[in-house]
Structure formats: C-alpha cells, structure tokens
Length: 144
Image 1 (cartoon, rainbow, N blue to C red):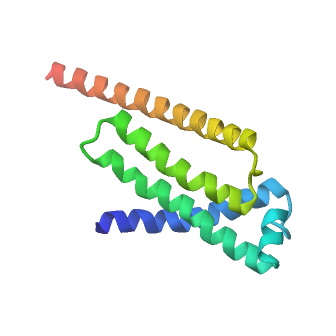
Image 2 (cartoon, rainbow, N blue to C red; image 1 turned 180 degrees about the vertical axis):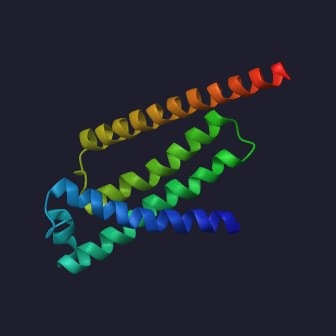
C-alpha cells in the first residue's frame, strides 16, 4: 500500500507538470496555456490553470499507479490491458472536461486510437527488450 501511494504521488506530481507543459506546447503560448473551452467553463485563467493542473495530475496518478500491475503475478498481457484501460478511463473524461478534445465521437475515437497505438508501440518495444535480456541471461547461464 505504501508503494502504491508513492507511485500515485509521483504520478500526480508528474501529471500536473506534464499536463500543463503539453497544453502550453499545443497552444504555442506562454500566456494562455489552457483551452478556450476550459476558460469558458471556469470563468478565469487562474481557475482554468487550477482545474487543468488537478485533472492532469489524475492522469499521471492513474498511469504511475497502474505501473504496479506489472509487479504482480498477472500475465504481462493482462497487466498491459488493465493498465491501458485504467489510463483510458481517466484520460478521455479528463480530456473532454479540459477541452483537449472536442465532445465528438469521431475525436474521442481518434484519440483512443492514438493512445492504443502509442501503448502498443511501447508494449512491443518493452517486450522485445525483455525478451532479448532473457535470451542473453539464458546464454550466460548455459556457458557456466
């Protein structure tokens, strides 16, 4: 439980920072780094920044907290599917609230597809890396 809280806290802080940095980069402005939709919902730039920071932090907490699934007895594929589902379940609603993606099925589907593709690329890369590591360790073990 202590480890879970540590991961969630690290994720929460990382998400808070990364959400604002990504938003700033996507708007290409240092003075207005939140969506117009969020500004309209909150009524003030300070409110928009606070809401964006808190909700971005939830995405980070879900991502980092979910990483502990890989340290359980779950098969790698199951842990990956659950981790992806957790992140997707947090990211899509937060993105809609923050105005990062429009309230349109097409845009939600596109974002989900992009996230799935990114997750798949990362998973395949990690799978290949660990498979090579296991092969190298087996070869070292055979030589002894």
